[in-house]
Image (cartoon, rainbow, N blue to C red; front, side):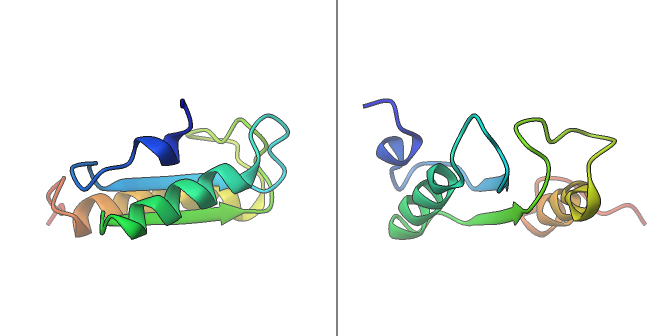
Length: 87
């Protein structure tokens, strides 16, 4: 009833999803199921899975490649037209 993938409709806004494989609180499967539900409803979305980051991916001090999520999100926001590119 409360699972994110069960709440997806064609009116769900575009989603940017970041998840760490080593998250001990929420299984990466939850993000995979949410993303699949978004695909099924043709909702524009982006899914990024990282090996490290636990349940605390943040704006700084992320391990290894997890640090890339910020630039990926920025590029996605621009691509979607949510923010203007800085000239």
